[in-house]
Image 1 (cartoon, rainbow, N blue to C red):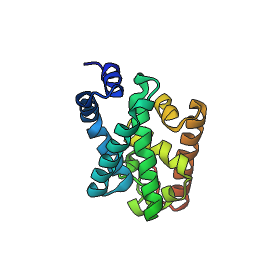
Image 2: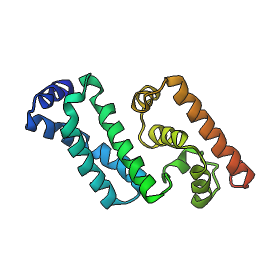
Image 3: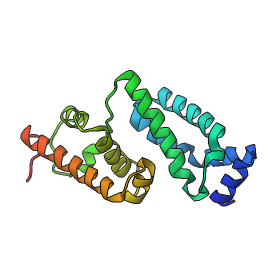
Length: 173
């Protein structure tokens, strides 16, 4: 069954369609939650809460083709709220790979630099390089223009590289 058709049925109260929708998305949602929360138990709890919130408000989905971005936004908002409560820093092990093969920084240095980025810049880097969202999808999730996403992305990568070079952690052969 097509995604849009499942969304339409779920909006009308079809619990089986809702269950199928969540089954289709649970792997990706879990990976996103885990990358934000850094703990498997917290990620599972996030999925449970997001499933509940989604079930409660699925009738609010205006465009079924944007269900995935709508659902992802709910998850990201939940994760950000949890991070604020626990005062954690958003980091991802996969961000080292975006710095290139010549990267020589320790993870602690990268984590320190990332923690200094503003929240929107951290989110854009995470969504783009860890979860493979396209610029257009990130713009929809964050409800901002694509140009803004590109600006945050370029700013964040430039800042990461610059600060790591200052620390002597980014070397070139």
